[in-house]
Image (cartoon, rainbow, N blue to C red; front, top):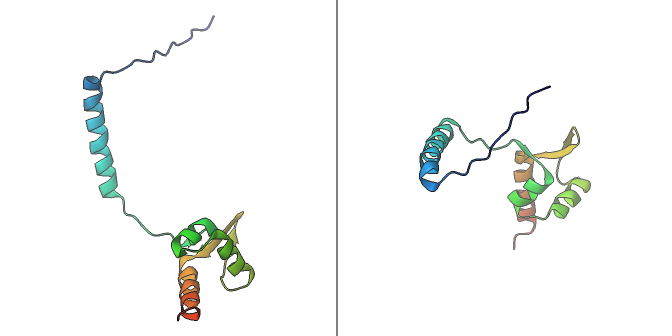
Length: 97
Protein backbone atom coordinates (compact mmCIF):
# COMPACT_ATOMS: atom_id res chain seq x y z
CA UNK A 1 0.00 0.00 0.00
CA UNK A 2 1.38 3.43 -0.88
CA UNK A 3 1.32 6.34 1.48
CA UNK A 4 -0.56 9.44 0.45
CA UNK A 5 0.64 12.81 1.56
CA UNK A 6 -2.01 15.05 2.96
CA UNK A 7 -1.50 18.75 2.16
CA UNK A 8 -3.16 21.02 4.63
CA UNK A 9 -4.06 24.57 3.69
CA UNK A 10 -3.28 26.81 6.60
CA UNK A 11 -4.85 30.21 6.92
CA UNK A 12 -2.41 32.80 8.20
CA UNK A 13 -3.38 35.75 10.26
CA UNK A 14 -2.31 39.23 9.22
CA UNK A 15 0.39 39.33 11.93
CA UNK A 16 1.81 36.02 10.69
CA UNK A 17 1.75 37.16 7.08
CA UNK A 18 3.43 40.55 7.63
CA UNK A 19 7.05 39.23 7.98
CA UNK A 20 6.63 37.07 4.88
CA UNK A 21 5.41 40.02 2.83
CA UNK A 22 8.24 42.18 4.16
CA UNK A 23 10.84 39.64 3.01
CA UNK A 24 9.14 39.26 -0.37
CA UNK A 25 9.12 43.00 -0.96
CA UNK A 26 12.82 43.26 -0.08
CA UNK A 27 13.61 40.42 -2.48
CA UNK A 28 11.59 42.10 -5.24
CA UNK A 29 13.48 45.39 -4.71
CA UNK A 30 16.78 43.56 -5.03
CA UNK A 31 15.70 41.84 -8.24
CA UNK A 32 14.39 45.07 -9.76
CA UNK A 33 17.61 46.94 -9.01
CA UNK A 34 19.71 44.23 -10.63
CA UNK A 35 17.75 44.02 -13.86
CA UNK A 36 18.06 46.52 -16.65
CA UNK A 37 15.14 47.37 -18.86
CA UNK A 38 15.80 47.29 -22.58
CA UNK A 39 13.52 48.30 -25.40
CA UNK A 40 12.61 45.55 -27.88
CA UNK A 41 14.20 45.60 -31.34
CA UNK A 42 11.09 44.19 -33.02
CA UNK A 43 7.41 44.18 -32.08
CA UNK A 44 4.21 42.55 -33.29
CA UNK A 45 1.26 44.36 -34.87
CA UNK A 46 -0.55 44.92 -31.56
CA UNK A 47 2.47 46.56 -29.91
CA UNK A 48 3.22 48.49 -33.11
CA UNK A 49 -0.30 49.90 -33.04
CA UNK A 50 0.10 50.99 -29.42
CA UNK A 51 3.51 52.54 -30.06
CA UNK A 52 2.38 54.55 -33.07
CA UNK A 53 -1.16 55.41 -32.02
CA UNK A 54 -2.52 53.68 -35.11
CA UNK A 55 -4.99 50.82 -35.20
CA UNK A 56 -3.86 47.25 -35.68
CA UNK A 57 -5.82 47.25 -38.94
CA UNK A 58 -3.88 50.32 -40.14
CA UNK A 59 -0.61 48.50 -39.38
CA UNK A 60 -1.71 45.51 -41.48
CA UNK A 61 -2.87 47.82 -44.31
CA UNK A 62 0.54 49.56 -44.33
CA UNK A 63 2.27 46.18 -44.48
CA UNK A 64 0.03 45.02 -47.35
CA UNK A 65 0.63 48.28 -49.25
CA UNK A 66 4.40 47.91 -48.84
CA UNK A 67 4.63 51.11 -46.79
CA UNK A 68 5.81 49.28 -43.67
CA UNK A 69 8.42 46.55 -43.79
CA UNK A 70 7.57 43.46 -41.74
CA UNK A 71 8.95 39.95 -41.50
CA UNK A 72 7.89 36.60 -40.10
CA UNK A 73 9.73 34.91 -37.25
CA UNK A 74 8.15 31.51 -36.94
CA UNK A 75 4.41 32.17 -36.90
CA UNK A 76 4.73 35.74 -35.65
CA UNK A 77 4.74 38.80 -37.87
CA UNK A 78 7.20 41.37 -36.55
CA UNK A 79 8.37 44.86 -37.45
CA UNK A 80 11.66 46.44 -36.49
CA UNK A 81 11.10 49.40 -34.18
CA UNK A 82 13.40 51.44 -36.45
CA UNK A 83 11.13 50.68 -39.42
CA UNK A 84 8.10 51.76 -37.38
CA UNK A 85 9.81 55.07 -36.59
CA UNK A 86 10.64 55.64 -40.26
CA UNK A 87 7.06 54.78 -41.29
CA UNK A 88 5.29 56.93 -38.71
CA UNK A 89 7.60 59.89 -39.47
CA UNK A 90 6.84 59.53 -43.18
CA UNK A 91 3.08 59.41 -42.44
CA UNK A 92 3.39 62.51 -40.25
CA UNK A 93 5.28 64.41 -42.99
CA UNK A 94 2.81 63.41 -45.71
CA UNK A 95 -0.17 64.49 -43.60
CA UNK A 96 1.34 67.65 -42.12
CA UNK A 97 -0.66 70.81 -42.70
